[in-house]
Image (cartoon, rainbow, N blue to C red):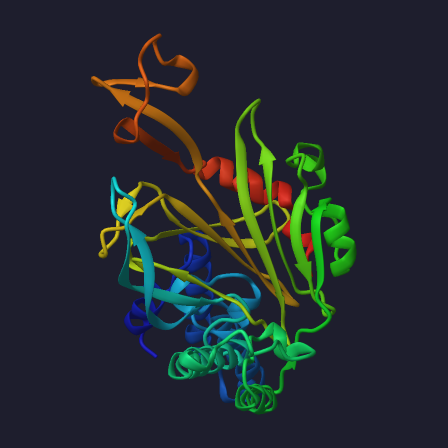
Length: 365
């Protein structure tokens, strides 16, 4: 392979400059050795080239081995788009109306090319189409099935059969025996999932209401809670851990995926992290106002971890061009729905990085 072709390939990789340059030099060196090695050293040369090829697989943005290191982004999780109807409310009378919106569906259990991803893509497409086709049959008489079928929203026997078919096809197990937690500590959730402590240095900053979480028997779990980052400021986040070898039943819908910007860093313990974010409030293609958001993507040896970080919210009134909080309204001035506004601020990149460091993702296998 000519050097120009090698450089062109590596320029397309989604890597930091230092890693890309080091990998390029390794491959170029292997290429030079191939051209200059004598026939008597053929066996040794092949060994070197094999190692170089393995290095390339590890670093490719879409290489299976690369995912174990955490270098993946939103496009690696997308399983397609979903058109669905949502309820909106007219202002100021509050009259409801229906609106069709399109969103991108992301897998939370696997990335492109893995059985977890392929199984979720097939199951999610089947489930949505089947439910839509049988919507009129979804009455109060339809009871929840037993066992893991309930977790996967199998409303009819045909869905149960299809789920088992997909599990067998991809060699995966279902998640089962869900434990629900409300008002629990972070350590309660970690103990139930069989992992080390997360946020050990910030456990005393967890919101007084504790965590809402559910944990499956294979160690997969979802939790939601808030951390105090100041006297009155809270950082709201949700965390999913999906253990490989099983079909994680849930995905996430995002709108305007092309608006997200991705950046990467490596924690002090050597865990690569990708952050996808939208920093400014925006109006999507359907006229819906959307707040900033961030999604943290981490690949671990035994699981995939995704963290959703919500923006800080502050309500205020804008009256005659002046901003007021509730407690700051002048005497006799009443805040009205027309003057009520929300302000959103996503934590800075430095704050997000500090949060992930404090999370200690190396504690999550």
